[in-house]
Amino acid sequence: MSYRIESIELYVRDTKPNRMAFSLGKTIGTKEAELRSTSPLAHVRLVLKNSAGDTTFGCAADRLSVRWLDKRPGRDRDLKRRELVRLIETAREIVLAKPEFDSPFAKWQSFHSQVMQAGRKQGQEDLTSSFASALFERAIIDAVCRLEGLPVFDMLAKDRLGFRPAEVHPEIGKLKFPTTLPFNPARSISVRHTVGGSDPLTREDLPDEKRVNDGLPETLDEYIKADGVRHFKIKISGNPKADLERLNRIWRVIVQAEQPVITLDANEAYTDLGKFAEFVEALERDNIGLFQHIEYIEQPLPRGLTLDPKSEKIIRRVAERKAVIIDEADGTLNSFKRAHAIGYQGTSHKNCKGFFKSLSNHALIVHYGLKGENVFLSGEDLQNLPIVPLHQDFATCVILGLTHCERNGHHYNFGLSMLSEKDKANAVRHHPDMYVRRGKEWFLNVRDGAVSIASLQRPGFGVVDEPDWASMTDMRKWVDRRHPGK
Image 1 (cartoon, rainbow, N blue to C red):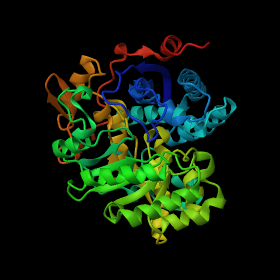
Image 2: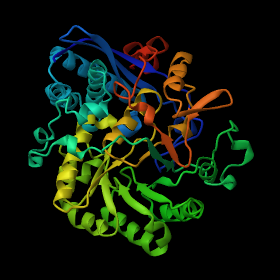
Image 3: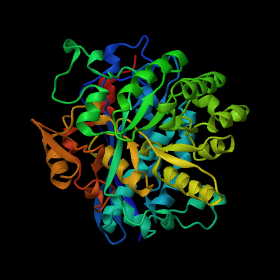
Image 4: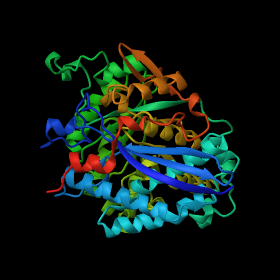
C-alpha cells in the first residue's frame, strides 16, 4: 500500500491561565502572571489518501512550550513563539514537497533531517527542531493507522509502519522491534505527580486567601489523599542548600504515600557538575530515607554542557549512587548514544521529541540490556493536555512498556475546560475509563495513583474522532495576533 498527503493545515487551541502557578524550580524574579501563563496547543490536521482511494484525517498536537524548548537568555516569549511557528510552517513545506510515501517510517526518514537542518539555519535549538518534526510524524502515523483500521500498538506488532531501528542505530543489527513490545498493551498507567518549585506542600503553605477553591486538590498532601498518587517528580533548583531543605519538607509529606517512588529533575539548573555531585552525596548522607526511594535524577547540566566527554568522571561518580538521565540535551537522534558513552543511564521519552526517536532509543536500550547493561527510558512531559497530546503520549508509553509517567496537566489546568463542547462530548463518550465528571466539568480520572487507558486501543494513534477544528484558530493568524513582531 502507498499513501499520498493531500493537505496539511495548522491550528492553535488557546487554553486558560493555569489554575496554579508553576515553576521548574527557579522562581526568583519570575512574575506570578508568567508562572500562571497559558499553554496554547499547536495542532496539525493532515488529510491522507491511500492507493486504494480511501481518504482519512491524521492529527497531532503539542504545547507551544517555548519556556522549555528554548532557554537562551535575551529572547522573550513573543520572539520564541514567532520563531517556533515559522519553523513549524517550514516543516510543513518540507513534508508536503514529496507527498507520496510507502511507509510512515520511510516518510519520516525523508523529512526529519531536512527539518533539523532548516532549524539550524533559522537559529533554532535542536530540541525545537525535533519538536517541529515530531508534530508531522505523528499526524502521518495517525492517518496511516486509521486507514489500516488498527491501533498504533498493533501496527507496530504486525510490523506495518515500516520501522527499522537499525537504520537509526546500526549496532542494533537484526533486532526485530515487534519482539521488544509488551505481549499485550497495558490497560492502565501510574501518573507521576510533579512537585514544582512553587507548589504548596500542605495547608500551611497555602492560606485561605490564596486558595483557588475550585473543588480540586491544591497541595501535595491533598493530592496524595484524594488521588492516591505514589509516584512523584520533584523539581530542584540548582541551589544545593535550598534544594536539600525543600526535599526534607517534601519527604515528610510524601512518606505518607504507599511505597513512594521519586525522581528528581534539575531542568539544567546545575552549571557546576562538581556541586551537583556534592549535592547528591549530601542528600544521601542527610536524608537516606528519601534517597532510597529515588529512581533517577534527570538533566542536571545545561544542554550545552551535558554531552561534554570531560564530564564523564563525575557523571560516573554520581551514577554509582543514582542513575542520571538526559532530557533537554536529547536534541538529536544520537544524543542518548553519546550520553550513554559518558555514563548516563537513560533518556526521557516525550512524543514532542519524536515518536520514532523514542522507539529507536527503546531498541537501543534493549540492545544494551542484552549486553548486561542497566539502562532505561523514562516517561516525562508535564503538561500533556487532552485530547490529542495526552492520548497520543499515553499510547506511546504503552508501546515502550512504561509503568509510570510524569503527568500533571490535570493539576495546573482545570480538567477539559479548554475544549469545545463537541470535543468534550467525544472524549467522554469514547473514553469513559479516562475521564470523570466533577461538578460541571470533566477531569482525568486518577484513581489509586493511576489512569485507565484501555480505551485508547482503537484504530489510529490514540484519537478516535476528528478534533473540532472550528473551535481553534489558524496558526498564522493566531501568532500574528497574539505574538506580533515589533
